[in-house]
Amino acid sequence: MISSAGDASSSRHWPSSCSPHSLCGLAQTPTALVVSRALQGLAAGSMSAQTFAIISGLFPKRAHPRVFGIYGATIGLATICGPLVGGLLIQWDLFGWGWRLIFFVNLPLGLAALVLGYFYLVDAKPDGVRQLDVGGAALSAVGLFLLIFPLAEGRERGWPTSIVVMLLCSVPVLFAFVVHEWRLGRRGGDPVLRLELFTDRAFSLGAAIAFVFFGTLTSLIFTISLTLQFGFGFSPLRAGMMTLPWALGTGLAALASAAVYRRIGNLVLPSGMVLFAGSLVVLAAQLQHEGTDPRWSALAGPLFIGGAGLGLFVAPVQTAILATVRPQNAGSVSGLLPTVQQVGSSIGLAVIGVVFFNLVATQSADAVQAERPALTARLAEVGVPPALIPRAEETFVRCASEQLGSTSPMKVPDECRSPASGGAPLGAAQQQIADSAVVAARESTRSAAGEAFLQAERRILWIIAAVAAAIGVASLTLPRRNQPVDDGSVAAA
Image (cartoon, rainbow, N blue to C red; front, side):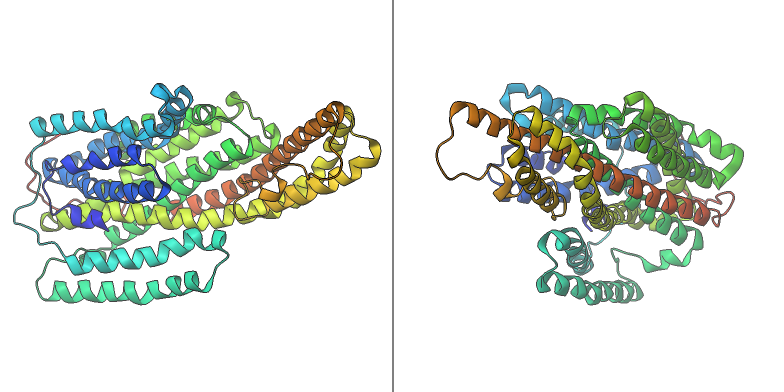
């Protein structure tokens, strides 16, 4: 919950945000990379609050729809174009740095932002100095870790007792956090989370909608990326290119969202969700029709429309949340909104991730059996003796089923990485046939994986479409027009 504490610092004090990128790029061990990523998360959390503080402090609320439209377009493009840029960097492998370039590329961008921010940003903190609520920040961090870590790791680890205990312990810790914040607020202190904010119906409903929305959006991006790369075997670059229409639709619609709001008010929110949900249903149908090697042109339409739905929703929902917030609470809300988004994303990713991999495992049996005739043809084509084909098929079914039904369906089981050895050495011709049989089995495993991932992703699209429809219905209960409270903003858009 470092985001909620981040608004206690100045919007111009960001230098520490660049160093974690260097540490990630220089990491020599997995442990060092994990620690560096944690530091990167702390830096990102402290920065994310500043964005909302700047918008709240520098722009009057009547300008928020336009400003958040620009902000939403930026966030949408950054979120969806990230895989494309990452794929390009990995494929180019400049200087032989491989994946490290993904982190190093942030250094010049961060330094440029620091220089521009120093000269052009005004310190947008509200009047008065906020005191850091160390106890609240610690309780929230521990409680969220105890909640999110088991959800993310439980399935892969087989839900051991320790994981279950962690999950159960999150309840009293988070309850203690709420009690601590309530008591601190009653004493006139400066809590991380101002509970009185949730007495405002528009704010609490908007925050809940944002929580669910960002959870579904992040998990959708995650499952689509896995399906394209590990299921269909696309390169990171091709996977990024497939989602480019999504980014374009998001950016254009976010820029237009302020104009749409002026015409229909907060009905822009359910309108965006209708487009988003409908596009996911169409996308699921297109994937079924296209199979495991879909054409870019076949998916571009529903992806663009889905992106447009996102763009019409992201900016207006944040405007609706901030509309009734009083100036003295702007700092607290500036930290709370990024926290709501990040926690929602983490929990949504953990939950949908479990559902997705369970669906892959469920679909794997039919996918493997459906691939047996193709494997038989491949084995006969490479010269495997007919008497040995049934044994090769059984090995394929066992290994493919074990891989796709495991907690890590992208990883080949160790015992299936190479053909069993033993007996007399093979001659050159026999060895060539054996090697060709292994290649045929791997191709069939890839095909079965593609089908299992395809069917799992189609079901995830239906689930998220249903959630999006529910979000659209919930957003109908927000006021038709935002009624901003008077603020003393220093600038107009």
